[in-house]
Length: 307
Ligand SMILES: [Zn+2]
Image (cartoon, rainbow, N blue to C red):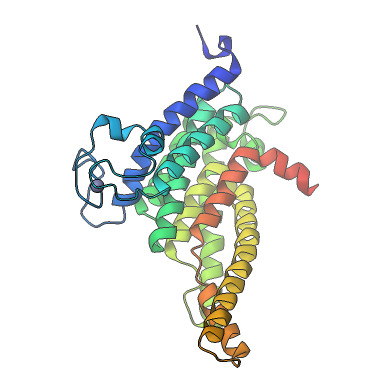
């Protein structure tokens, strides 16, 4: 029995279930990676953050436990954050999409895609929490990308540079072409964000781009090539500016309703300033992650959209 003999949907569903279980490990990573000196491996068993009770296997079934317990701890009935089942479900969904979009038979490709997507999910959640991207994900990705491209050249199958550098006719990609495209992608990904950061520092005198973002796009570029890295950055900037505007609007409305609550009718200008300052502080990593993930999964579809 091989993958190609199984019904295509079965492979995707089985892999999504695997993604659900890995998702609960990702929750551990998201919680522990930013904490200095806390390893992903120990303590072994997870516990309730509110009362410290160790969780048995019944309380550790991804998604299912949360639903059965209606989102509460069994011992102390404290609320368990919705983010745990969210991360598990998101990872399952991403892994499902990887199989469907790569085609169930091409398992090396969807396996690599799944690993990358999970890394992006961890980077996204940690960046939302504490405005940093763990080196384990970004630098780990930089080490993993060239190795993965050497083993699975089809990762760079849509990269024009890889096709040009390969000795296979008609747009095929060989190991050397994929490896060189991976390095070029890392260089372009890191380079363009580093330049933007340096330029922003010169213009505004403030840190415009964190080094974590630079390292994350370097890792992403290693998987999606130089053109992919630029496309991912463009997508990230586009979505981030829409979100940034909404975020400023949110702070503006908040500030207005507070002013009204205090019985002040003045200060529209003040609210605008508050909104502009507070609304600007969005982490960029999640948007980069979104851009990289979209290019990774749907490079050819995105290209036809633009043309
Ligand atoms: Zn508890």
